[in-house]
Image (cartoon, rainbow, N blue to C red; front, side, top):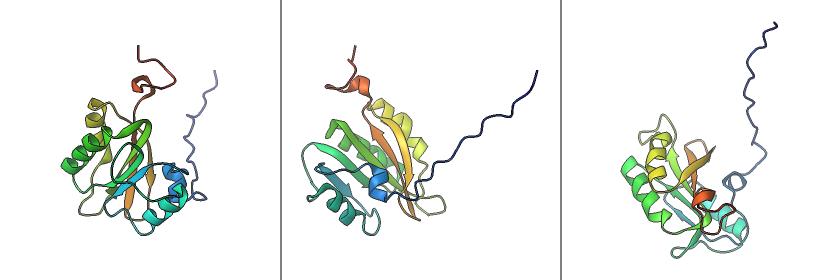
Length: 148
C-alpha cells in the first residue's frame, strides 16, 4: 500500500485586495469605527460605503480597536446588541511584539457565550490585525436556517 504525504494547507494570497475589501465593507452599509485603527482606514471605509460613519443605531458592521482583554469583552457586549443579523464586528488588536498585544483567540469563548462566532482573521497593517465575529445563521431572526 502506497503512502501519501499529508496534504499541505495552501496559503491564500490576499495581497491584491485592499484592507477594506478584506474586511468585507461594501456600499451603503451602516458602519461604526472606534479607536486607532490605523492611517487611512476611516477614510477608505467611508469611501467604500459612500456615506459617513455612524455612531448610534443598528449596524451592518463595526471596526473597533481594543487595547486589553477587558476592553475587548466590553466591546463584544456593547456591539453585539447593535449588530443586525448579518452584521459583523471586527475586533482590532495590536500584533505580537507590541506592548498591548492581545491573543485574539482568548476572546473566542467569551464571544460564543454572547452568541457570536469568529469566522475570519486578517492583517490590517504592520501593527494591527483583526478577528471578525458574526451571529451564527442558526441564531439569526431572518437567517437562511430556522433557529429550531
